[in-house]
Image (tube, rainbow, N blue to C red):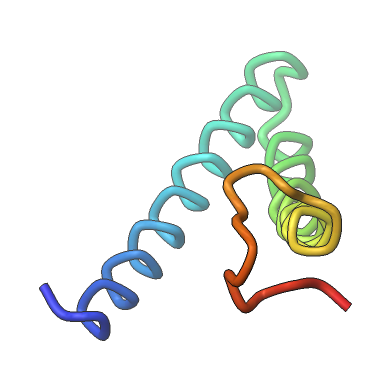
Amino acid sequence: MDAQQSRIRHLAKTLTWRIVGTVDTILLGWLVSGDPTIGLTIGGLELVTKMVLYYLHERAWFRYGKLGRTVGDGDTPS
């Protein structure tokens, strides 16, 4: 598998995993509340907030994370 195929595969897996997670949240919200509208509302909010939190988490790891880095990695944060 070349680099382009790998990127496409990772993107597809990311999207399908996000769908699975959101559907799970919708169903749990519905189950707990007894109202499918509440489940959909919670799932919709969760979809947005999880993407924002993931982005911020990635930026923090890039800026402050030292785990697994060695001198000369070329991605030294500024």
